[in-house]
Amino acid sequence: MPDEKVKCLYCQTENNVSEQSCTNCGMPVPTKSPESANTRRGFFKKWYWLVFIFCIVMMFYLPR
Image (tube, rainbow, N blue to C red):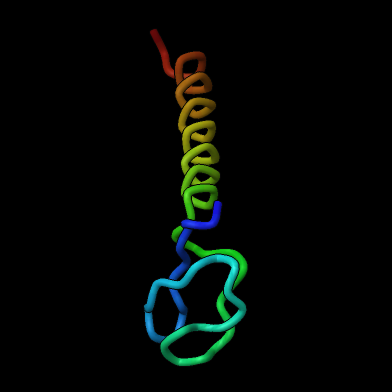
């Protein structure tokens, strides 16, 4: 994906993923961004399953 952007952790300038250093400040561009879609999706999946398991356990644990 050549049009995917990643933010510089130092100056918050958006750079292409393929670039090695920031176009504004010259610092190295991170290979993984905390704001990337995969990071957010992974966080959501973990919380979804945690809440799902909690609900199942509470269905059997709580009195009827």
